[in-house]
Image 1 (cartoon, rainbow, N blue to C red):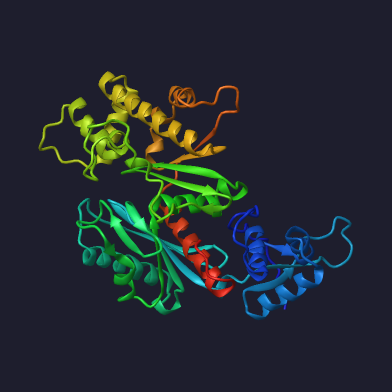
Image 2: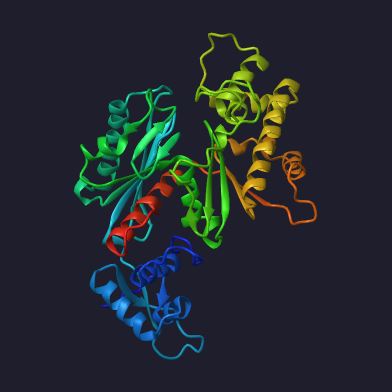
Length: 415
């Protein structure tokens, strides 16, 4: 039976990787169809450099397994004859949840196997460090809330992807350090497994946003790019050859904790001189209290303080302007280091703080270029994406979908 509907947008990298560990052809075919939304067998054969017979055999297997289905393709230009048959992912083949844990609000998204968002929710929380059981209570409340909204049960969820700020061992499911937790080396994956039937895939939240760009955003047509996030902290994600790069132990690219000044400002990680200590919310709010002449007992969230500071800067308040300009110079320094180390063609600046245009003023980007050895070459492209929490959580669904694709369709590999 064929289905008639509009072609889905697709999700996942549209460009094939090169030099990557070979994946089974069956998985390559499935990922090709999902990335393009809808594809004919002839397109699959041509672009994957396989025979028409192999394309037919592999797609027949995926159809029999209920991962792909036939649909009416795009009509021919002549307008004559029956439209060619195309293939698309069966959305109901799997269901996943993506979660972003943060300092003031946790966000969750429910998605199907084609990457379509089915439901979303959020849960306000307080800015404090918590124990692992306390964090699990919040995760449980968020998942139950999403299940209630969507009418699903936990047994209908095939996997959960979760991102949170800090240093995360993706393979072990251990949070080595996070400002959300009182203690380090917390086995969140084990705590989750004791409570829920579906597997948990854990990662740093900046990696989640990077996956969102790779699967749903500007990175779909890029093999290599970097994402720098500025919110409560400073994070970075890097895609090399269509794959998220984590480092040898899965804990690399902590841009916020690279040192920009010896014996400098105190970072919440406990060390001094981190980039984050000059650029993150809490760092700017620390100086804003002085610039705005707030009494020590004034209780405001860092976001509220920064919003006031930004309005004052726009109104001509010199001290407020100085704070943002200084932060912009430190951002220039951090970005120049990224360019010098990795030479990406594109850096995406993202996070709610990119609403503050001082952080991407012409002077900031010009100083970034001046600090790199790029004379005579095309400068690194900079894009500004002001995403909300929902896209971070959607990136977490990509982590879960990638893992499911490995285990159900191909050989297990790290997403």
